[in-house]
Length: 576
Image (cartoon, rainbow, N blue to C red; front, side):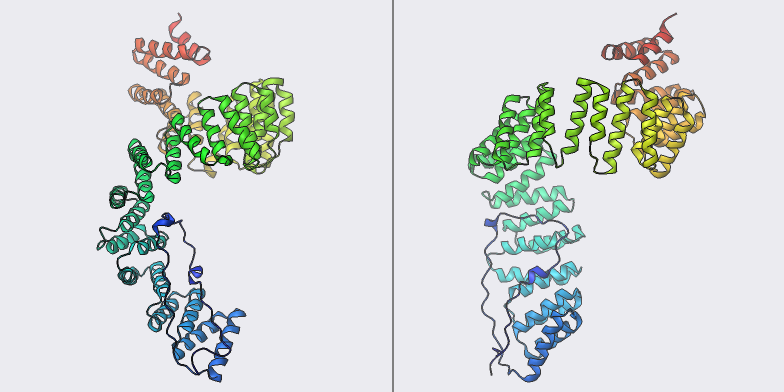
C-alpha cells in the first residue's frame, strides 16, 4: 500500500500562524518590493504500509490534540514522523511542537521535517525564526544563509522576511550584528541595505541607518520604500534635507501617493502650513470622498487663520457622514470660538455627544457660559458634566475652585477642594492645588501637611518640594531647610525657571547675593515673569547694582503694567 493512507487526510499547515506575534511592529516594504512566494514542489512521499498500529497511533494523536492533551499529541506525532518519514506527518509534528511552546522540541521537529523534505522552504523559515527568538543567533544565521543561497539571484525577499523576524528580537544590537553579517556578501542588494537601515534605526544607530538607507536608494532610485526611509531619518536631524529628498522623488514620480502623503505630513510637522495644505489638497483631489483629507485641510486652515476655508472643509467632512461626527463638531466649535462667535461655538460643542472630545467640549461650554453669563450658570453646567474617571473628576474640582477664586470667593474655593480631598485623599493634583490655596489663606500648617504627604506619595514631584520650600522662604522661616527643599526641586527639574527663581530667592535670604543674582538671571532668561523680575531687581538693588535693578523693573513693568508685586517692590526701594 502506498503512502496515501486510506482513512487519512493531512492538510497543509499555515505554520506561520503558530508563531508568536512580534512585540514590535516590523517595518514593511511596499508589496512590489516583495517577490511572490515560490510554489514548492510536491513532497516526495515514502512507500509506507498503513498498518493497524500506525492507524491507531495516528487517531490517538489526533484525539489527544482535540481534547487538549498536548504532551500526548506531541509525543505521538513525533513518533509517527520518525517511523514513517512522511513529510506530511513531519509537518504535523512540527505544528504540535510549535503549539507546545517547547523551543527545543520545536527545533528538533523542524530539523526532522527538513531531513525528510529538504526542499520545504517553510520549514527553513520557521526553524530560523524559532532559533532567533530562542537567542540561538549563530544557528539562526546558518539557516538564514541557506535561505539566501537557495534564493539565487533574488535574495531581496529573504532579507525582508528576515527583517520582519529580527525586529521582534529584544536585543536590537545583537539582531543588527546578525543581519549585517548576513548582508555583507550582498552589497549590491537594495533590500539588504534597506533592512540593515531599518534595524539600525531601531538599535539607535542613526548614522549607520542613514548611510545604509542612502545606499539602498542609490541601488534602486525608483524604490519608494528607500526614499521614504532616508527622508524619515533625515527629518530628525536635517529636516530641510529630508523634505528635499521627498520633493526630488515626487518631481520624478508625481503619482507616488504614499510619498506625497509623507511629504505633506512632514511639512505639517515642520509647521510649513501653507505648502502642507497645498499637498493635502492635491491628495484630496484624488480622493474627493475621503473625509480624512478634508479634515486635515480644515485643521491646517485653522492654523493659517483661514476660517472660511476651514469651515468649508469641516462641513464637507461632516457632510460625508464618514468622519467622526463628534470630532468634527468639536473643531467647528473651536473655529467658531476663533471667529468670536460664542453662541455658535456652544451650539457645536453641545453636538459632541461622545468620543475623545466629549469632556473637552463640555469644558469649553463651561468656559463660554462663565464668560457670557457669569459664575452661577457656569457652576450649574459644571454639576451636569459627566466625568469618566478620577482625573476628570479632579479637573472639574480644580476648575470650580478657579472660577470661585476669580470671583474672589476664596473661602468657598478652598472648601470645594477640601471636600474633593475627602473623596480622593491621595490624588496628587488635588493635594497640590489645595496646599497652594491653603497657603494663600494663611493656613501654612495645612500647606506643609499636604505637601509633605504629596512628597511621600510622589518623591519625584519637583513642584511639591519647590512650593514647600518657597512658602518657608517667603515667611523667612527655617531658611536652611527651605533651601534644601528648593535645591532638591531644582535637581529634579533643572530647567524649570520658576524653581530657579525659588533657589535664587533662597540664596538671597541666606545672604549669598552673587549666587542669587546668577541663579535669578538664569530664571529671568528662561521666563521673564514679573515675579522673577521683582526678585532679580531687589537682589541687584541690595547688592548695589541699582541702575540695572531699575532697568529690570521698568522693562518688566512695560510688559506687565498691572503687576502688583512689581509696583510694590519698586515703591519699596525707590519711593522715599
